[in-house]
Image (cartoon, rainbow, N blue to C red):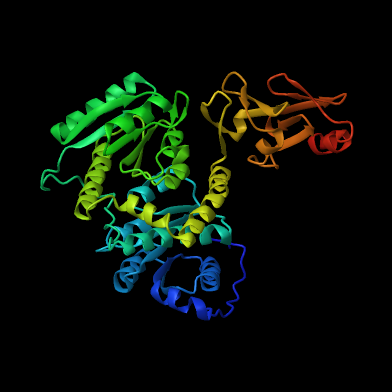
Length: 450
């Protein structure tokens, strides 16, 4: 939206294709449409793409919802860079009306709202970038998308048409074969409630073959149960749902996240999950997600196997694709941090492997404890993180968190008073202030008392 959110010159430098790479570039051509209503951002994207991707041809630029329908339908791109908020409404509205959508979509948004990320996931987006992002972020996203697309095309497997998130569940479709389901949640009541909803909606179309409550039991259940769908909670005994997925890098099953926390949508994108449902799960949302799983299962059957797994296997034999995947992995922490910075919260794993998400305002102070850091907050008992204080502060805004001592950092919003080289906070704690920093600290925190 407004404001240039990429650090790149708008001046377009000519590029040349090396002679020894001409044949490779000739065989790997991609058509790309940019959907962005901020002209400076469009120019920056165009500059980065022209400079780093001579195999990509920008064939269209959309600034409104109406243009999305017209230009994408006419140009039939391979890749679409899609800003969510356009003149005339949300770009998803136009995307839903495009017929035969066999392209990969990279969503760009200045909003870190869960609803947008959830909708992008349901529309089949491959990546989700939160503005402001660096040129390296868009480069990594394009590399990843091209790698996956190349692997699919090498097997003559085209990307499936993206299902419309607004489309109702059709009752006229042929009855699909029964799919095997595993439910992973650390609360028995939640597992029971979800299984009841699944059974009520899908009856014999779904077979629940196992349930699990922890990271270890989930891994065992998946290995033994050969599921088609795994409903996966984030916060589990012994770790997180993402720890489970790390064990299955080339998975043959679809994953639907079911969580009380909407803050993990960015990580869910990195793991290519099918959908993200927030508890309590609405039956219509559940039905739509499972119908998408049925559609993906049919596509795999028609293609004679798992398209995603084939792509991963093919990627493993190609050095350039491996490099693309590594490049994207290196960018993932930056993207997640951008999302957190937009939303104003900090998500972290405590030393006991439990996952926590605290709004910045809920964090009172941080204290170094050897190689660990103790987090004092307003939601309950202090939490310990197996990271240094400096690494923790790297995830938090310096405008809000003040390092008063090599072992202490405070939240400015919880500061109450300062005296005799101590700062008093809203919970009554008194924190050391370095003698070297005292004068500066007093000047900044107590300007009227200078």
